[in-house]
Structure formats: structure tokens, C-alpha cells
Image 1 (tube, each protein chain N blue to C red):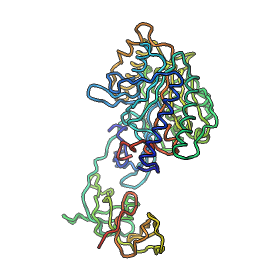
Image 2: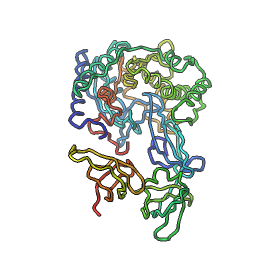
Image 3: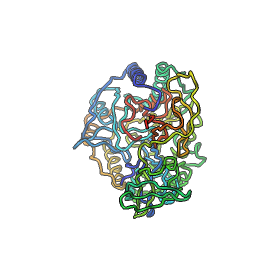
Image 4: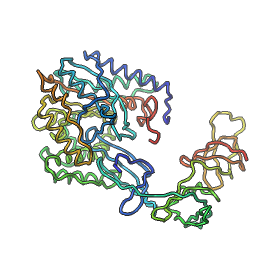
Length: 339
Length: 186
């Protein structure tokens, strides 16, 4: 282990962190649920790769199963789940980590953002007490529109209807500002998948080249970014041409990603199929369309009007404990020998 | 190989040259493409450059073979190694040896790396035993456990050692971290 925290201190950090998150969500009237971690169906994402377990997959998030429970009438609920993502490793990434994921029936992004603020505040103060450090505090939270923040952090304007050529020019321009030199790789030509690739590429390069330095200068300010480009909607509703999605950053690190949830099974199916087309372009295997999940959306009253969010527990505890990498706070250290 | 298999010490073939990944950082916004931010070192010229790949890219690995050889000497520009069985000698430029020179002592057995029959680098053993040439005197009465002092070994490498280590003694050093491991009896 590289950090100063030994196994006992880490166990106390986790014990108090998990209890604090559970305590808050229960107080808010949510039921704790548990759903399968090994499953036939995962949400099809272009750049989140499931770990295979024979014919099955390990979950990359508990989203599909929790939404099936919501369709069944379970109501507002939460889960603290182990999730697995193939190939993710680094200071802020691990192939296995914990998501606290919760859904508020009739909730909005604003409700989820308020939850994140309270959970971050409570965990920072409880874990701070455990490790006997002055608790780290977020001085204030700001809410930014995605496009406004892009302009604020880069000095360049970006519009929701930007063309593929414009997006690629912005991505290449920002790519030259990356700390790690020139970026390679070319986007697909087919218009159906090009937009998804273009926005995903721009999001990544902007995050690293411009947003991260901007966040690093104001670590005491928490940031929610919302109203994403429609092509990055994933499983969120699109309203007025913008995805009702929110990303939250605490102490300069991305910790939570929430949606006002899409309930339309037809739209969801077509998004999954589009992602599969992009996966094939990227040389990845297409993933099976999650039929039972789509059937649950289509049956009866389907998914209730709701908003849901997933918060990275390991990252939040890392920030609260004042260490620099997930391996410094995970109870057993990194599960990998060479990171 | 897929870009997701990148890690330190992987050898890549780029524009016909072998490059080794010397530093590796993975960043990824929740739903965006992963970026693999690497420092890579040209195994022939020693040049180090930054390079970023995105999720989904495919890379070619460099076929680099290794042979166990003995270090003989350096003229300051080249380092010479010998195959202990065939007595073949090869030379490697000092820019390529770089920091590894701190551990090269007469007759040290290393793995020399070959790319297309050309020696392009060495892999050091995990630890080496070297003689302490200089060490600050230990402060008498300081019994703090874990206290250290500065010392220099025969190759000129400086490092921190426990207070009881004296000049002329042999110590085992970790070649990856340059850290003292233990005292070795002659």
C-alpha cells in the first residue's frame, strides 16, 4: 500500500462512508435494493466495456435492473453496487469499484444535484472526523449549462447544431493542447454513427485539455454540468434539443452522472442500435440488445417519471480522505499488481 | 493489440521503430472515449515523446527479443556488453542506457534487448549488490527506528541507507526505485 492509511483506517473510512451514504438516502425515503451483478443484459455504451463471465456479463452499472424494479412499482430506491469495467485502470479508474445509484420517482436533475451536494458534504465531514483531518469542504456549488461551460473553459463557442466538420476541427484544436501530445485516430464517415463519435471525442478531449485545468483552478467549488448535446443523451430524455443529463464534479474530480430517465422503449432501442453500430466501427463486438429491459419499459405503465444518478463511492472516499488515487483508499489496495 | 492493453514497458512498433511505454495515464469522462496518455521512448535513439491514443485504436507491438549478456565497459559514448557463451559483443548508445547506467558494474548480467538483430536496450535485474564507497557517519545515540543517512555506491549512485551502514560494506539495491533493500555479508 502506498498511502499512509493502513487496513484498519481504510476499513473505518469505508464503514463511515457507506453508512453516511445509506443514512442519507434512507432519510430521503428511498428503499435499499439489491439486484444481480451477473446478468445477460447490460446498457450498451460505446466506451464502457463489460467484463464477460461465460455467456453472461458482469454489470457496468445496476441501471437496467433498477429500472426494471421501478417499472414494477418499487418506487424511489437506491443501491450500493459493485460494478466492473474492462480495461479501466489508473489513478481515478479501477476495473472494479462501487456505485451508489439512486432513483427518485417524479424527481428532476435539480433534486439529484441537491442530493449530491448533501452526500458529498456529509461524507467529507464524517470521513474527515475518522481520519482526524480537517474535513475538506466544498465552499459552494455552481450549476453550468454544458455549452456555456465549454465556452467559459475554452474561449470558443460551441453550438448544439455544430456540423461534424466543426466538431472535428474543435477536437483537433483542443487535442493539440493536451498535456500528452498529439492525438491520433479518425472518426467514422457514416452519418448515423459519426455524430455520436464526434461528440464523444470532443467531450473527452475537452474534458482533459480544458475542463480539467479549469476545475483544478477552483477545487473548492463544486460544479454540476447539465443539458448535454442530444447525441450524448445515452439513457436520458432529450428536451428542447438537449439531453437532460448532469455530471457533478467535487474537488476537481468527476463523481456523479445523472439523468432524467428516458421511458420510451422505441427511442431507447434505436439509441442502443446506434451505439452498437459505433461499437462495430471501433472494432468492438456488438452487445445484445437488452430485450427484457426494453420489454419492461413497454409493458403496462412502463417506467414512472423519474430521475436517477450514479455516484462513484471509491472516488468520493478518496477525496474525503485526502489521498490522490483510488488505490490509496480502496480497502485492499489496487486489485492490479502493476498500477 | 488493443489500446486498452497499454501499460508501462509495453513495446510498440511505430513507423518501423520500436518504442517502449515509460509512463501511462488513463483518463476518461464518464461517457466519453478513454484517452491513453503515454510517454514513449524510442528504443534506438532514446528520444522520449508524449503520445495520446483514444479508446478503440489498434496498436502494433514491436517484436523485441532479449539475450542474457555481461556488461563490460563504457567509453562514455557507448556501453559494451558481451554474450557469455558466444563472446559476441554489442554496443549501445549512452542515450539509450540513460539512467540504467547508475547500476552498471563490471560483469553485471543484464538482459540485452534486440530489435531486428540490433541491440536497443537493456533490462536490469530486479536488484543489484554494490559496495558503499562513501557514507555519512551515523549519529551516535540516534536510535529512531527507520532513520536514514546519505550514501554513495561504487557506480556513483547516491541513496538513503540505514544509519548502521559503513563504507566498504555491500548493500542490495532495488533497480526500479533506487531504494536500499538490505545489507549483504561478504
